Length: 285
Image (tube, rainbow, N blue to C red; front, side, top):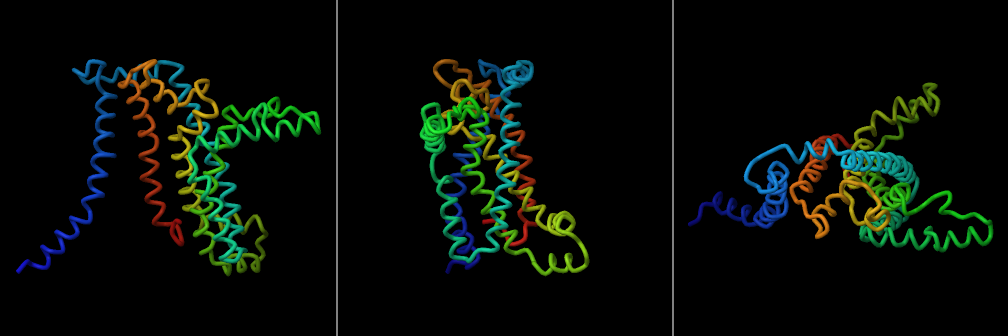
């Protein structure tokens, strides 16, 4: 007769096997290969920091890193702000209405980035629907004020799905917030701003930071939306990586070094994000 502990171990191992295979073949092996390529020369015969030195000494690559970080920071700040307001508004809605709004917010998350970018161009492009209406009825040429096919347009495109992520992430935080604490603060003479900054913010801060980190990681690693909106004219890390592994300019070692820069930025943030999730009241999603 098989020992029940051994039987349980074999069953757990069998259930975990698909996850372990995915972890090995789609995460561990690709990351290891990219790391090796980033630290090896073009021939692959010796280890070197030459790829990183070239990136940090070349202004074009430095600008790509800087642009990606700045755009991701701006996108994360805006989406966390809008997501917080939306998540707070959820607390005043019935569960049915809240679920309907959440379902709508999930739609841009499901859509590919290319579809979102194409929709924005159709609306706000040089010949877009909104652009044509503004020009016809108000004499305002929108691209002269706001060019959707620019970094600002990219930040707008990111909001279409990042706000969904942040609002859903923060909804649990605000729904679990004890309103009696706010009422007690007001009854003791604190004004609205004192209540927000001294009572509410310390409680929801872990959730806000977690939502911000989540939005930043998604934005800095985005590719489809950026390619569709700014295309070859954009200087971002992801766009440069794709260019370096294309037939036009095939340099996989340099592309791997750029990819490692994303890893250097996002892995520590992901670890912080994981720690914050344990502190978020009510959990996430």
